[in-house]
Length: 159
Image 1 (cartoon, helix red, strand yellow):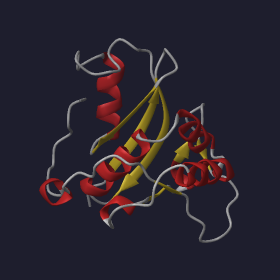
Image 2: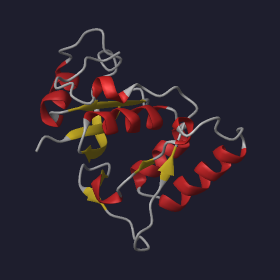
Image 3: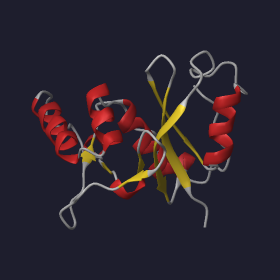
């Protein structure tokens, strides 16, 4: 069974880069070595892997990547640190600041599984959770047509 990953890198300039891949080790190595000169991370090395989460399909990973890319820096930092109360608080503040979704597609959410968060030292972080609790995030960004991408089997270059 093939896994797909969403990951966040902290760049040398303290910015974040969010991406997805089907080979996490290879993709991180590409970022760290500067194998893709047109990538955002090329001039921002060294890089630190601060978050990973696996998904069953590329489509799910792409939706999660796009949602995380739309999050504020504060919300990303809270997720990276495993501060789920703060992620929820920031999500609630964000939701109250924007109009209701126009359609079901606009209301998509991802579930961030805390057991897959890594801390600053690259070790897994598992915050205390109430059983069954999930953290959802969303953005106002347009959704990708996942039917075209679900069977796409290569790692995409940086945009």
